[in-house]
Amino acid sequence: MKTTSLILIVVIAIMVLISGIFLINQPGIHSPSDTDRMIPPGILPNATRENLKDIILNNPNASMREKGVLALTGLTLDTKEADDSVAFLKTITVTDKEENVRRTALASIGLIRAEFPLPVQGDMKVTVEGPIRTGANLTIGVDITSKIPQERARVGILHVDSPMTLFAPQEISTSLSANQPAHVEFVMAAQEEGQYIVRLYYIFDNDAFEYEKMEKRVFLTVNNSDGAYEVI
Picture 1 (cartoon, rainbow, N blue to C red):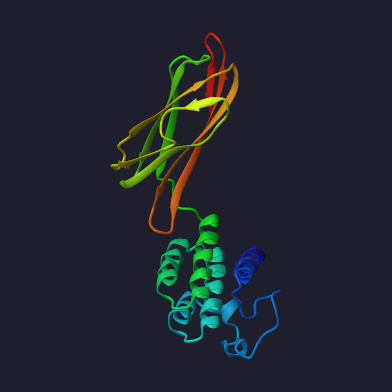
Picture 2 (picture 1 turned 90 degrees about the horizontal axis):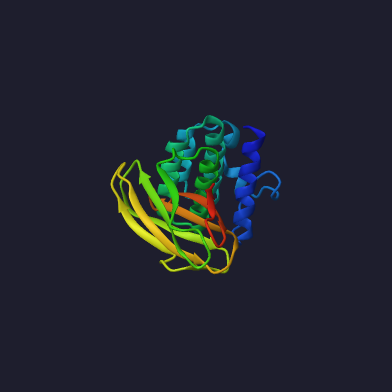
């Protein structure tokens, strides 16, 4: 198993320990207990995916199931079989009767997706309309799309510099058909000359466990005549 995989496994163990849930033996955590010695020799470095899944699903000992989750996570980071592992671990987060096993499975999904993210499904484009000058209303338009249908996509304002006044709701929700754009608008006005930053986001859920989020920043230069903007 690669060094990076071992480090990530230890990170999960530490997270669970902080939550007050005590894991059995992991390198660098604490000494083996009698329960640890029940684990078949070589399970962590040598077990196959199917061996580990069987332990996670069927072993009556919660500590062994949890160790199986950690081992499957490390194996996944080495073999790159992310989608299969994530789908399996999502089931464990719901079905395992022990909270510490469910928590470890959920943390493992996050680690796997940090290394092997889902393909990007959404896109957002931002424009500014109206005069960019002191006291005048300007409109920030956001066009969003998704390659897959979305029942509830959300577009919103993360931050507006003062003294910029936002007149529209801070978040707008809409449904999306696949590859069909939707347009939302935010109306605001700057009360003084200066430079302002507006941070926007677009977020939607892939399922109950995973979501996609993207952000854009609008840099506004407001004066008494014609200002300017840049989107990053």
